[in-house]
Length: 98
Image: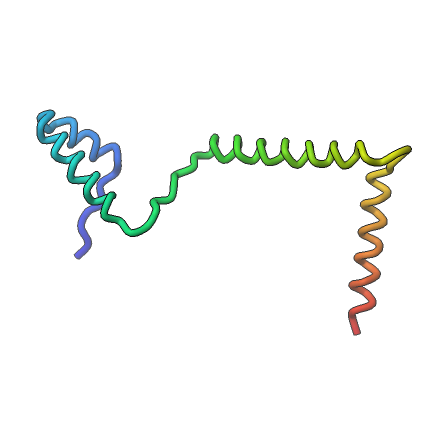
């Protein structure tokens, strides 16, 4: 038989009912258990943090693209380049099929 699972909110309510000295004992106990773990505990990433991380990565990628674009002299048709790359890829795929 599996024990009933307790949510974090329920646990917080239970801990709040303990006297401060017992809460401190609980904190010490939890810290000792976590310190004994042989592996790093993965950090929990919430949706907002994930969004910020993705925005940062997108900004870095755009900065790299801007830096690369500055090295080109004259006109550059990125859409045309992409179309050409797709045509080249399609030709390679079709040639490789029996």
